[in-house]
Amino acid sequence: MFDSSDYPKPLDEALFETWLEQGREKKIPYNYLMIIWNVVDEAYKPVYAESRDELKGQEWYPNNTGQEGLVAIYDLYSESRIMLENRH
Image 1 (cartoon, one colour):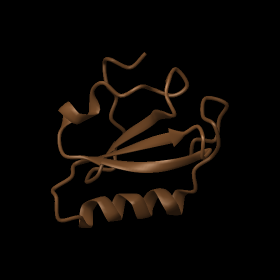
Image 2 (spheres, rainbow, N blue to C red):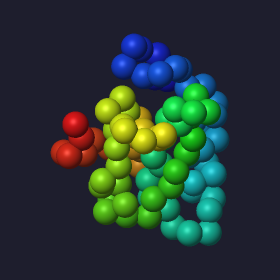
Image 3 (spheres, one colour):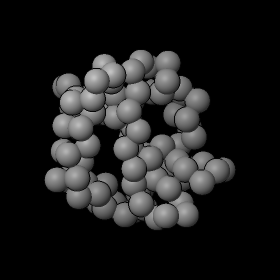
Image 4 (cartoon, one colour):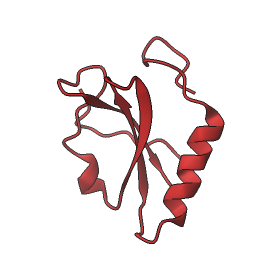
């Protein structure tokens, strides 16, 4: 996944599936998986969120000014991609 010039590098599907499973298994009732690109490590990492409010205010890749940029958001249970209106 993320196999286009819009993304820094591809993400292994098996790793993505593992992140979804890990989010669903956590004791805290997370609902969302944010996939973050870390510029320094040149790697994706998962960040889990409980509510939609936590999704707002993230800097999107490639327009991020800091070390990390949000690449995508997924619902942990439907596995559908979430689109936010405030994305730049």
